[in-house]
Length: 158
Image (cartoon, rainbow, N blue to C red; front, top):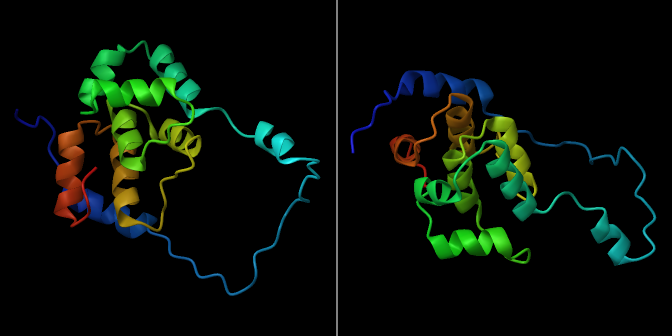
């Protein structure tokens, strides 16, 4: 399978140099808002964000995607996709979710929201995450192309 996308490594280099943030906190972090007084752990748990499985379903419906095409494009097994979609207690790894985000052609904000619902994020302090952020922002959704870019920079592929 030929790649149709030309990879501009100079542009990616520039993006990484501009966006890379490494912050050292010299002062203790301040809590900006008071901690809510939860009477029990159950009250706290009920305050949580949307469930990952609901977010994936909503994205697929909103973008009018075919689930079979999504998991095939993401290069994940049908059984794993079914497990992710139907078992709220199953927690997929970040790379699996990133491949699903690519397969669903999500933009950076949509990807961040989906990752957040699973407890992940795209850090500005990790070069691999910056590369992924670049790919989502520049609509590079082919997993093979994204992995070529990650490999070019000596990062682990997804």
